[in-house]
View (spheres, rainbow, N blue to C red):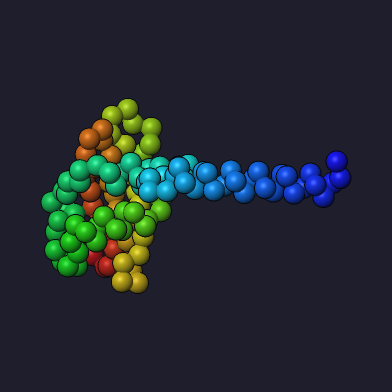
Length: 127
């Protein structure tokens, strides 16, 4: 069999496989969350969120609602060097993001069934 025929059969089978794969995966919520940052963000995002008094005060002062906080979590980056990931029970994560061109840090306590936003800290604020 000539090399060109082999390549043709390979590409034909490969394209049929891609079409079958697209058919089976269409309509499903499949995602590739394999990085530690993506897994942590997804884990926090799917849980019921609770807010501490400090976080609520900061949110009221800057006119931030819970929908914005959820979006800040989903688009943020976890700073693992500043996070407490070694705890047995609840782990505490520091998520960094920007809001209205200001750097923001969210400190979140991630437990089994809830995620508690402990604080929102604007790094440009002087207090």
